[in-house]
Length: 378
Ligand code: FE2
Image (cartoon, rainbow, N blue to C red):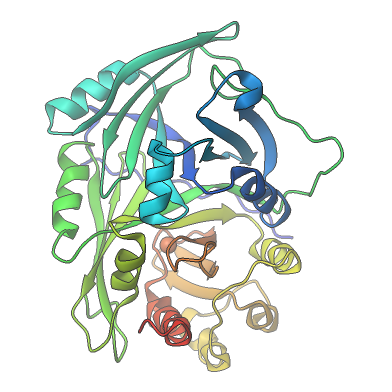
């Protein structure tokens, strides 16, 4: 397939450097059955086993499996008895993202800076150690029950964190499918709350609002939403924040909020250098995607100009394309990956473009509305 240099992130000088972030450390999901979820993320998404903590490591309240692919690390955790933080989270929200952990140079400083700027504390900096070194973790709350953890791991050489042991499975090794890194993670917040959370990311985390979409940009005949994208100073960590906008019918953000029962992470966009190969693999492994109408592809070349990928292949696979001043991007969206219509994944390949597929919003939201119609939740 075609190889291009990785997209060079745009630097946003307005973003402040009081809280420099080195990258997304991991995303932790609280799920009902992490053993089975780990199997799903291996077999369907090609994640590789990395680390384990649970009964076999002396924990008596939870079990966690850590998986990785490219630079992405996910942690899947389940409770081992009733009345736990994890269990209550699952009861309220179903399976979902509990924390977005960010790697920092100095977790104590990151926590102090965020707290001085108005963050709500989840946990003060704590050091954990084993024979491979130490990690310092601190945490603050963001929208809903979602957290940001600050992870300082420069003095640690183990597979994940103290308390975890390497997890391997010699007998079952599904191949990776080319996922490289997390491109962006989207939060859904309540009506009228988008600007409050944009302000939180600007003031508490030093992010910059880099893009704004109003209800004219993102609307169909029936539903609408508004979105603003915030980015850290390096341009690597991007969090679009959505809120519902009034429409004739229930918007996808309202549906999410009803089923998640609070604000939370709506989708995780993961980057690939070969979206065609990645999507073929995902489809073969049973991952289901939103379908776009065939006529989407009729006007595609007029809209985005010439592209390197064969349109017929994109049409067969349901991959969307959009162009901005910097280049173009290809993207596709899975159906929700749990029974509640909440969290889903986006697969994205950037060929220069730094935007989020604004030209696809209408086709995409109409596709979501067709799914809502089938669920009886429109
Ligand atoms: Fe996205």
